[in-house]
Amino acid sequence: MRGFFNCGDPLDTVCRVMDTARRMGMGFTQLEFAQEGDTAFSLSFTLDENDAQKVNTFTQRIGLYIDLTKEAADV
Image 1 (cartoon, rainbow, N blue to C red):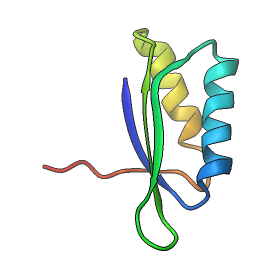
Image 2 (image 1 turned 120 degrees about the vertical axis):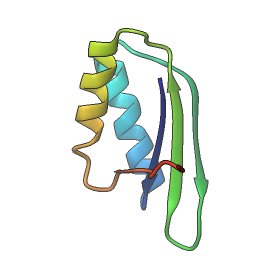
Image 3 (image 1 turned 180 degrees about the horizontal axis):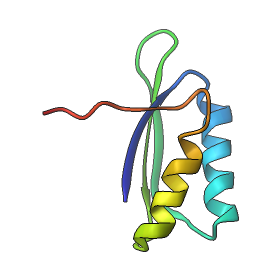
């Protein structure tokens, strides 16, 4: 599962995302954040999990973080 999000405080947000994955017994094959302007950052990751229910639960949990917003998809 690949995820693309935006945030304002990448160190805090990445720590929270990693902790959520750890607590759920999940890991990453890729985790990266990059600066996107003066105060915005993009966060992208690939989970090493294929269980759809577990991935959905993870996505719902990190969706509750105030600083994290899902990146709009290009159509």
